[in-house]
Length: 450
Image 1 (cartoon, rainbow, N blue to C red):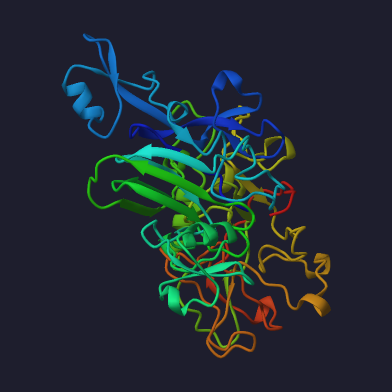
Image 2 (image 1 turned 45 degrees about the vertical axis):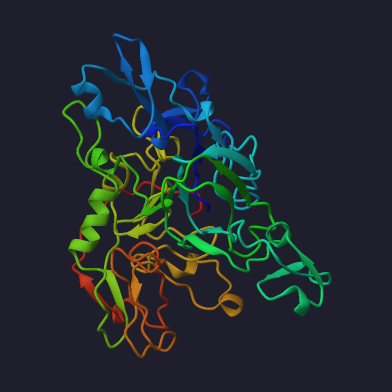
């Protein structure tokens, strides 16, 4: 699944913080960053939308937007830090409402740019000092085609591609001063530079344009440029120095809240800060040193899936997670409560009963507690089932180099909750268990695919 994302390019740099959004208004289990009054779905803080703030001078009755002010500076001056200044992306330029850094047409068969994207502005204009982002990205990198000072080259009339450099005398095609435009149109990546590298886990990308010029952004991922993932940005103004690029892991901002219920809350500590921390405290990422296979737990309490974007647990499934640890209260795995608090607002955690068989893979999430007679995968055609609670030692039949988890900060899909390994024909009784079995949790049925 692709990440939901926002892109902001304003006439001033806006200070932003995470805010609420509208979840599942169209029945697609996605967030829309709109006003609460316009929401026809569930309004929730779990959407991680962008809320703009500014500094309001109560004497002059004017707002200041930009990187020259922040909340502390504002309040120390006796002014009011508020989200009512209208320092908002709609006053500047953006990709379009709900549009993200992907070409659409994937998992949700969405339009260009995301599930709730109403338009995709491919051409943007700004001035030096303007900022693009924060742009949430997963799976697609962000690359920049050669800048406009490398426009001359030799155009091949057969391949419709331009080669930079060389001389006009050596050109066997057509010499042109529009090489950049040809390559951009044809998605030829010669001379491109990577701004945000490909990563399978959620990241955020921010770029401040301090140098004037033409910027042609796209993705080098297979087929993405041709599918229309292009952004042509023209920046004017004084040269302010080097452009600034930040690429950071993206973490959902409400996990700490989930793990620390207040006196009036009718749910217990749950979510990432409970089960993710438990898995690493139990050293489940250590190397398997069994003569057969390693299984995390002899008995699994069920599995837990987080449907939001997060570097550690986004779209990951963890084994041996009880119903309460996963989604906060007994009964949260029932059909009407899935992914929700007791009041119906979304938190995006889904619990699955021990032995649950995924409708997409035909295999159990977890080896412990799996009734293999219920698995539907065609093993003759697709090979052995793989499981999230299994790791393999070096020298294994299916993984001579081992099938082991990477460190917690790995950008690859090899950490707990993502890596799946086969069993090479060994049974649960032949496995080495990393932890002693716990008590069984809820017997509520899970449903759905993940």
